[in-house]
Length: 483
View 1 (spheres, rainbow, N blue to C red):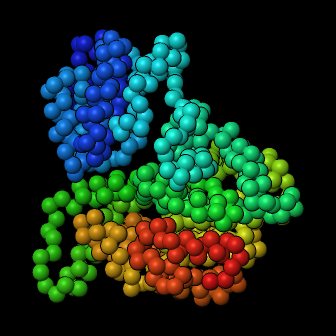
View 2 (cartoon, helix red, strand yellow; view 1 turned 180 degrees about the vertical axis):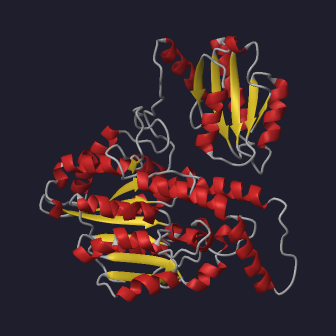
View 3 (cartoon, helix red, strand yellow; view 1 turned 60 degrees about the vertical axis):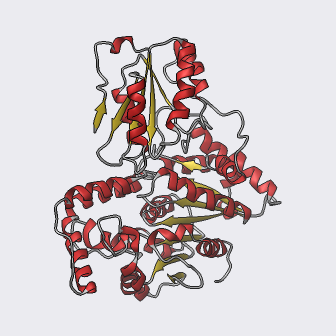
């Protein structure tokens, strides 16, 4: 990480307000943002600094900021050596700011710089933490409004600081969870014309563990309205995100200077390169993948975790008083299957039953699945298990991991061959392991579909949660329809 110019100086005590701005690919927004923000600061007549915390961008964001630094020495830049994601950029800005007070704001002007003065005035009254809350969502699309309404159907691992609704993306406090499974669920039941004795379908969705927060939000924007339109109440679990950027950056460092394939028989050279990558990436990749698995586990492993707080709120909801009137469904993509395998085990032991568990390209290990989900299938706590995965032929050609220096197999192959301590490990979402370890058990109510096919058109590991055909199939299964 480099800082330009140095943030600490003899004048640091004179900085009244630090404005921290995380940025990535924002070349066109820097100058409009500065024009409005500098006008606000001129009106406030405060000494200030504007700190851009920049993930390396393929556009001219860095160059534009450096030009503006030459014009205005109050502008400063933190530049990361590789992409770490918005949360890390925000924290770096906060930790390196020198002002008496600090404001964090996005650069795209969806949050108005003119609000900075109001935030500062509230802090001057003695408040330690101040949030700006939207009073309306004018100008947003129907999908965006739907995600904003149900998107606070997002359960995160909750912090000690209570963050109100509409103050930022995907943050939830306990009162939001309570409102979700009482008020909002009641509103949905009424809108769908359900009587008190009618059961309601509820789907708890867990995205993959390597996606960025923005990508997870895009997934929510597709699934939440689709579920609601089919009279399935959506709850979207947002958990640790953007480890893909960390993984890619860490592996690029490891592979720097390594010889690349330059010729020979194509298939043979490709196989050699894939195997070489798997060996080289085992140690750093395992560390990152293990962290992701720990995050998935942490969603439900303590009383203070987001999953358990959701369970507690449901226990207090009148709509969960009779569990025969609640049809719970779990939907997990990729590492979301790891999260949900723990949910099945822990909440199943607390009395919950699941009408269906639906995994797409699941990255959960076979042994964890056998330990957590298989017993629930056998004892009836999971009434039906559905799985969508790529055919092995497609796994071998999946370009999802191409950004990792040309690795030409799927993410699940990388996990199986490398990221589990470099030892070949059976992964549930790989067709060959599913057929050998799970299908061979011939369990009732276990169903699987290989893609691409009629039930799913996905051709990549990451394509399942974006594929409309897969979405329609999962929704149909949750509504009890045959494919």
